[in-house]
Each structure stands twice: as structure tokens, then as C-alpha cells.
Image (cartoon, rainbow, N blue to C red; front, top):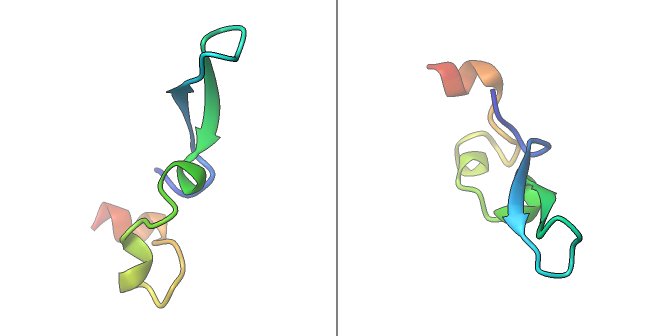
Length: 49
């Protein structure tokens, strides 16, 4: 499942490897899911439905 703490790789020209990891919350702080769950991130059950 996914949630706000899942990490994704993003380009970073200053990092030794040329990329760095950010959480989904950092990459997309305006995620639409909380609009349907009273402000909280949707549960795994909601994502599976």
C-alpha cells in the first residue's frame, strides 16, 4: 500500500548519486485523498476498495 511515508526517488544534481529520496507527503503535500477522509490520509482499506 502507499501512504505519506512512502519514499520516491527524485532528481538532485547536488547529491552524489544524482537523486535523493523524498516521502510522498513531501513530494505532493496537497494530495487529494484527505478531502474524502476528514483530513487524514486514507487507510489501506480505503485504497483497496
